[in-house]
Image 1 (cartoon, rainbow, N blue to C red):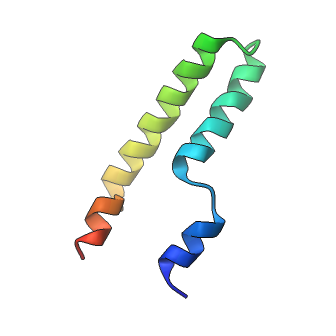
Image 2: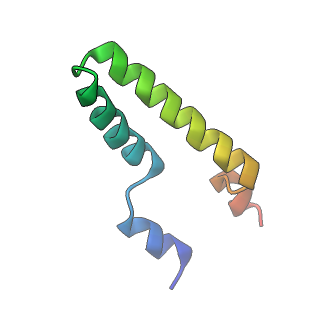
Length: 63
């Protein structure tokens, strides 16, 4: 099984970030500015983790 086959069945990091941001915003009275802040923080965290591990899709395609 190719790694691309596995990724088709999993939500993307962006979809996951959206779900997490919505859930957190609901805890914070579902205000738009909370949702945007949450999404920004989650995406930044994902990006930092990907950069630290060196697993960015652009880096994987070069291998």
